[in-house]
Image (cartoon, rainbow, N blue to C red; front, side, top):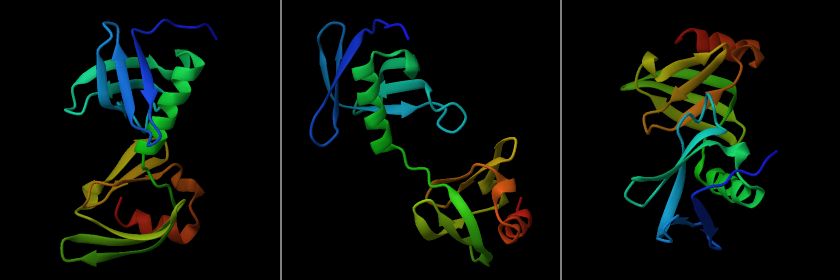
Length: 158
């Protein structure tokens, strides 16, 4: 892989806070990376924004960055990303404001609420994302890989 020149550098403190130093040498404290397409293209188009949400830099392809910069950016992204993967669906029941889900994720069992059937969105192929009432996204990477009962529970709502 060839080294690609960047017009910024990054520093990370012990608490994984990023500082972006731009080409003019200006330090931007509390910078944070944002995946622009986190589910469909997680290694491309990474925006680095300041504390006010203004873009400071954009990385077209993370794999083209120098090793140290890439590793620092990946570490910051890992600290920021939170997309639990649904492994099985124990129940989906009607609730006063939508549906109550009990699921087992890669991080353990959890209960959440969805507001409507539109809270389940297809990502292409057999991939789905379920968005709960607090706007947390839960990924189902392959509907066909779910057990039969989980697929049956899901099919009622999607």
